[in-house]
Length: 462
Ligand SMILES: NC(=O)c1ccc[n+]([C@@H]2O[C@H](COP(=O)([O-])OP(=O)(O)OC[C@H]3O[C@@H](n4cnc5c(N)ncnc54)[C@H](OP(=O)(O)O)[C@@H]3O)[C@@H](O)[C@H]2O)c1
Image (cartoon, rainbow, N blue to C red):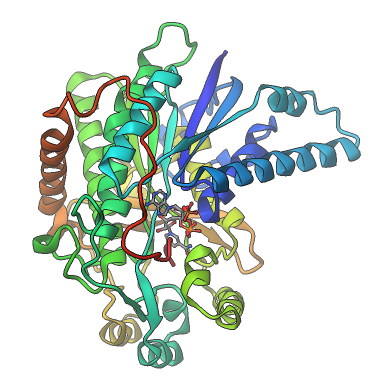
């Protein structure tokens, strides 16, 4: 049996930490319920045996920008797992599997700041010298330049359609034009380009698992790209570094949708052309709406509390998109990592079988769109190519977690932009890194501390 290596970025708090908790909980048990099939997909896919790999142990790699915070989080993760194992023991279960898992568990910490090319390359190359391969990479770290609430944009739409108002944050005013020390748009580099560079630099490690002769299974590695329900058309291709937009957060998440969709399409196309399984697959996930660091950083604690309560209201009114706590929100990552790929719907292969109705009241939604500037209604012509999908954390009204699917918006219109983005990012990757072997040595260790950009800004999503 081989060892499982999973790296999670931004693992020290919020949704990344919640996903790590769930991973430990699940992988320490023989019954990994988060990996159970959740989608009604075609018969031919169901014929594929539900075979789950067995692993000799887990190395969980927490990729964080602050080592102290990461160490504190690692301590919390280990106590969390110990409590779970104690609980199983107290219930009289002979948990040999869990005890073995605990003994073989390694939680590593890697320092990486996504707003610095040097830090990202240094971290990835350090990992290449340390780990033999990487099974999965969860690109979760993210930030937003939220500064204040536009109450008018919140209250009127809230009265008209509370669920949408509690789901998208188009009423939060965002800083415009912030740049990193590298000179790139801050939110763009942190949420899109930094993670892309990290993936590209780790690609040899991700592909290595597939090609190794000393492992007994050859599953494609998975890269999970964290998007948001708010990934929308605010994005304007002429401002691809997101420096003039007043919606850099939503735009960065839409770029993530376009980029990851195109990478997955290219991986599947290569699979068809070569008749060999792809070595790396790309999946888009999102946590729904969860209370995390972002809110704390710019809202008064009373408002944070009220917002948390309002998420219950949204659930009560029928929203599936409010997991609320990061642990529940982590199911999008654990499900897409632990379930066999055959259990995940794929629009290119199963388009006709995917049923979703994203429009529950078109007229009301259209009015809401005008007020919030968020395009919510999606009308898809069945003749058009099926849009890519995202796997999101959802719950029923009692808070029981599950995974749901939403579409990448305006795919037909933006598909050419998704191809242009991959080309542009590749061009930058080449000119910044590949053309400078003297600057980025292959045996480089983790990069030195990178000063935080001009001022402290809130990290997260919402
Ligand atoms: N919460 C939501 O409702 C929601 C909704 C949709 C999407 N999301 C997405 O979910 C992901 C996780 O967000 P969250 O809600 O868990 O927010 P969070 O609690 O603020 O966590 C964000 C994580 O990213 C890390 N990070 C931020 N900037 C970084 C940088 N420059 N380099 C390295 N790491 C950095 C943070 O590190 P520090 O601890 O050092 O700051 C933290 O670990 C994000 O991609 C976010 O966009 C969240």
